[in-house]
Length: 136
View 1 (cartoon, rainbow, N blue to C red):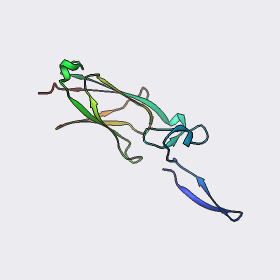
View 2 (view 1 turned 45 degrees about the vertical axis):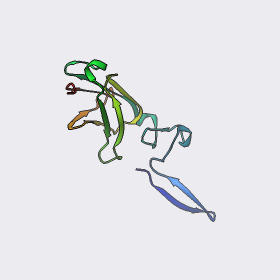
View 3 (view 1 turned 120 degrees about the vertical axis):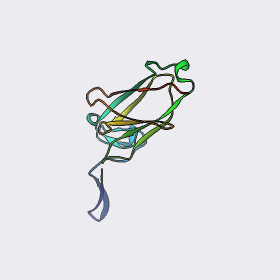
């Protein structure tokens, strides 16, 4: 968490950044930091790309196996940031990618109706995979 502390310097009020800065695009960030998907400026060493993959009933995800199913993918960084959710995520591609996700996001919740599954994101590869059943 970054905190903005006002300082009075030479009669002018200025700000000293000591933590993550809110952003919308990379150019909003200073010192080579990048704007993450949860809108925080962080150094590249604290950001990664994450790939979520899934199968349906033991088979590759496809139009035939998914039959229109969609998910909500909720990325979790307990104690650091609010959850970051993407919805609807179509099942048929069998994969979902998030670039520029802070490395402290280490869990993804997969939600589809009453189906709720927690999947760990591999800290070294940024990969996570799950199995779901075919929609009825």
